[in-house]
Length: 255
Image 1 (tube, rainbow, N blue to C red):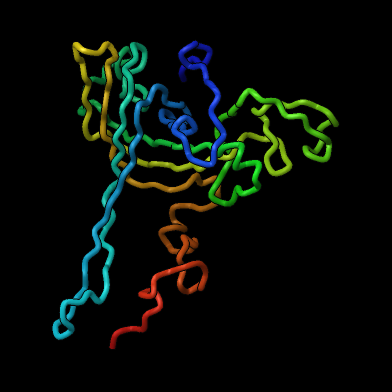
Image 2 (image 1 turned 30 degrees about the horizontal axis):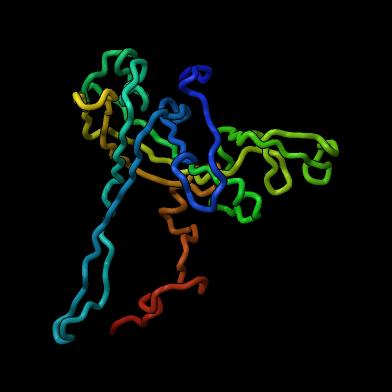
């Protein structure tokens, strides 16, 4: 694990907004995805799947239904500033650069996992809007502000006691801020490049990562198998008659 006492690893404050900002996005990799990856310039997950139209002769130029195809593997483009003590391979768990012999994609023998956290702003935490899609962040997030609490605000606290935001009050209890957690499982690098240019001194490394699966943190009690089995409400459930859905979801069967 990286030395967090090093000045380059210092953590600053971030604004509290309702809009998601990149300084509140944390990427973890390495053994069991527990080490935060530093100096990331960009982290861009994307995925796609096709939808095949169903048509029938005698009904004109009309689509009866769109049938979703198989989902392609998730692709993540990542860019990072090269460090003497940690190159892009090493940042994601391989023994690359100064840490070992890994110099090429052909030296990668094992897949890795990535954890992404979008830390929820204290502005949103304080509104009481945190719901099931959130979980506690893996890390403390000190905004530099202290909060005066009372025994009625935090169970067991003394009236007038001051606590730092690393144990911020959340829904009446002390704890880390919430975060939207996403696990990218079974990942492999599929391309890698380094840029050395004369017009800038900073060396940038970029790569593309393909992932086998994606799901929310299992600590939130929704396992990948439950999602696959259709046992979890993902929204727009016509059978449950909740929320808004397409008119096509309630159409009668074609005979």
